Length: 245
Image (cartoon, rainbow, N blue to C red; front, side, top):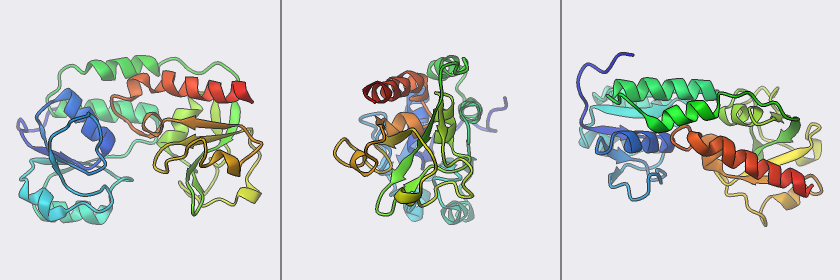
């Protein structure tokens, strides 16, 4: 694993999970992050707008030696604007848990982290294949309009490694709009609390009587330190829903 040509002292992250990963591993390196970067708690950096609408001028003014981004989370036009302004941009794009673990190790190693305990723990946590029974589920991520996980998503792979197969995995879109009256056959609905904040009184009523599992969106969709505990957290939340059914 090669390190970057120079030891960096200033970086900006445009992805909440990567903000957490870098801040936990290399404290003090980040000088900027998005308004949505909520972890680690108490992170004191300049806020540079949202993931979809970052303030390019503010980022450039921070004089970062590297901007850390994601191909899906961030818009290509914003990343090109940053490059045009002279910023180096590192783009991640994991679609599976192994992708995420490998890309995190590459990034953090390049930044100078020789040992990452939480990443070692995450690799151990996800090393054992799922051997239990399997369920077929629909996984909404938004309502008004209703949207769900489709093909080739990181969150879909996470669920698949927990015995939950995405009923919309064959969709031509990664995040298709869905018609609740025309859903494919499924036994479970998985409702994360982000990006839409599904809750006990906001979401399950639309799918009754199908069982609904309310799960942590951070553990389902973030790839960073949360991966070390995500398997246990999500498995417990899924099991609670299926026991109630």
